[in-house]
Length: 263
Image 1 (cartoon, rainbow, N blue to C red):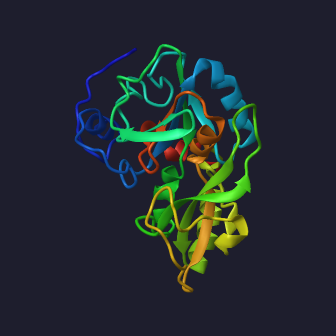
Image 2 (image 1 turned 120 degrees about the vertical axis):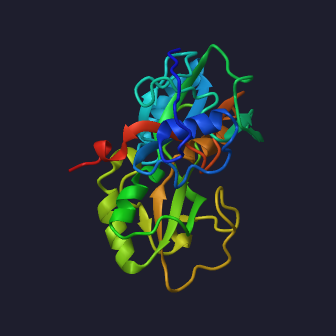
């Protein structure tokens, strides 16, 4: 694996965020950090399951837009962040064993094995800068929720779609749809706007964010496909081990988010 010295601990820069995670100084969400750079969701599985998982992503590309797949056993994402280490450079990891979620970890060095393959999947956090520039606030009112919408199965991988919900004003909802449609590598435009019940969104038990009793009448719920979807597939597939980012705790790359946007 290639390595290099990270010269900054500035959380406005990707390598600064990764260093802070690697050294255990930052274990919280990556939302709001290194604004303007692509953030990714992570999935690590054994090579024997990698083809089925890649097929699952291809069939559910809105939720699982694959930006990079590492070589077997290599934790370095050479395309998105040369010199980084996917075993240490996220603030928090979700661990799944045989369909059960285990306690989160802040490093997976001790869990890493030679047959692991890592997938980096586009994250909606990546278009936060574009939304802010368009006048859509991204610093509050955001949740990650399970839905009753099924994904398209591939081999052992199946399960419900997970979504990111934001509360916006009607004008902001229109603007957000226009802006995010330019980012297909980071989930693209919303897949639903309005009543959460129409997609079976579980407001009582979010993956990320506080439980919700009622939606205020002054806001419009807007829903995007979410890269946490594979974690539901991991629970359903019951593979012996799968490692992912903890929701809201992504991997910050060196790639300018604007470079992946459509004109």
